[in-house]
Structure formats: structure tokens, C-alpha cells
Length: 258
Image (cartoon, rainbow, N blue to C red; front, side):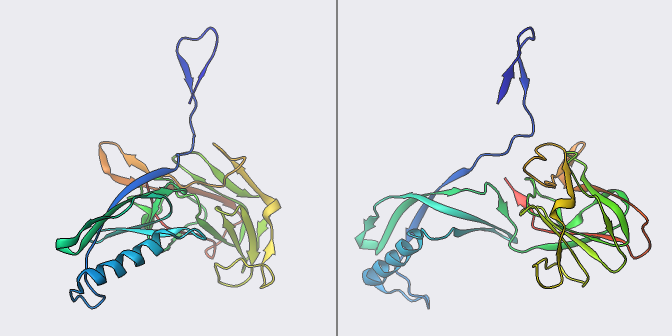
């Protein structure tokens, strides 16, 4: 997206745009093996084809698609856009069909969350479990342990910041759900911000600044080290007044991939 301005040569680039949803073509080959690994012939191949058709026919929720290469495992929630009619190979008891799936959320993710603990305050902190990401992490959970007066967390790559305008008292934790744009203060050592279980909603006391801050909170974005494209790290700055040795910053998230 570019913006033309009278009296200026070329276009003015518009930065900070979101990635678009992607589509993936899958070529699927169906064999005649039973769940135990035995060859069940053409009849078993038909049963397998029906099972695959039921899976691809999922419409009430996102279908989980997993990519496995050696020790690398990534998952994405997808919708099935179209499927072809099966092509049969009767002599081999085999069939092949093509499916087109869409990744509405754009990014591939790690299977599970990881938790990182850092300093409050602290500058240029590397969120080590998120190293290697290629896409922004848009749904992290941030936890600030008090005491901390007007704490804030800033993503170094984009300059996006979330800040709490009040004070996190000693023994309290401020939980910020960046994906759901919610925040709560809890008095127990937890990452659960379910209201009614000791959590007090403080969403109205959160200020977000930086690119796209009108509709997002703290997209943690990896940046490459100079001259080393394999060194991709997420860096954050944390600030607060009135801290002590008990003050801490925590981030729970999954890595993101384009």
C-alpha cells in the first residue's frame, strides 16, 4: 500500500501493515493401510478416504494443520476452501486428491507456550524462548510482578508499548492479555486472569502506543542481527518506578512463523 502526495516524487510508503491470510495447496495420497499398519486392500482404502473426507469437511471449527520436519513442529488453524474429486488407482489400491486450505490467522505457531522471566526494570532484554521467530507474536501474555509504579513494556523492533497508569503493589501481579486486549491484577502466583477468582479488571488503566496501537497491544516482533539472518531475537525494554528485588517481568507466548 502506497500513498501519493502532490508535489512529491514517487509514493510515500505506508508501514506497519498487517500480513494477509495465506492459502496452501495440499496433495494428499490415500493408501490401503489399517490403523495397525496392515494392508487392507481397496476396501480399507475407501474407509481411509472417507475418514479423510470427514476431516476435510470440518466447518464448525478450525482444522489443526501440523508441519513436521525432523525436530521442527509447527501448527496452524486452517479452513478448507476447496477439495477435488479423488483420482483412483485401482491396481495399487490408492487414491489421490487435492485440497486448498486457508490460514486465517496468517502465522504458523509452536505447539505450546513457553514462559520467560526478565527484569523490571531492564533495557534490551532478549526474550530467549521466542528466538527464531519470523513473524510477530500478537497474543502474548505479559505479567508484571510488583512493586512497580506505572510499569511499561516496549517492543524494541516496532516501538510498540503497553503501559499501566497505576501501581502494582507488592504481592500483586498485573496480567496483560495482548491478544484479547484485557488486563487484570491478581494477588496469587498465577497466569489465570479469569474474573471472579481473585482477579480485578484494570483494562481501562492500560495505555498502548506505537504503530497500530489503536487496535493492538504489544506485537512482539523478531529482528535480525546485522549480517546474521539466522539470529532472530525479540527484545523488550521494561520501565517502572518504585521497584524492589521482588519486581519482575514475565512473558508467556508461542513463537510465530510466516
